[in-house]
Length: 64
Image (tube, rainbow, N blue to C red; front, side, top):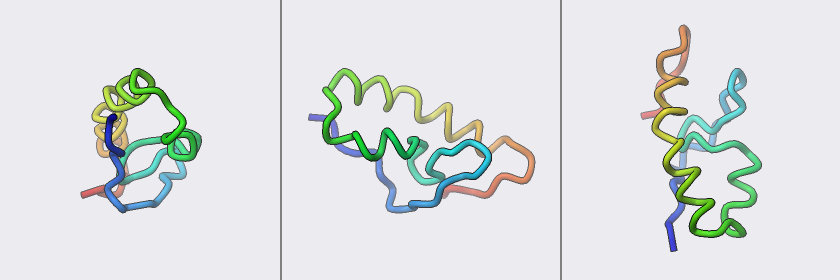
């Protein structure tokens, strides 16, 4: 089983709708425990790019 990517920084970025801590959408956070391992792997693979995109956006707040 794939662990949660939660960083305990639960703040939603208004521009992207993603959590600034982990990069997941609210739907992904809500459904995480119901996802299969393949669904979790897919989301996990997308997270670094999502977090980078939030960081490089002008006026973006840091998630770390």
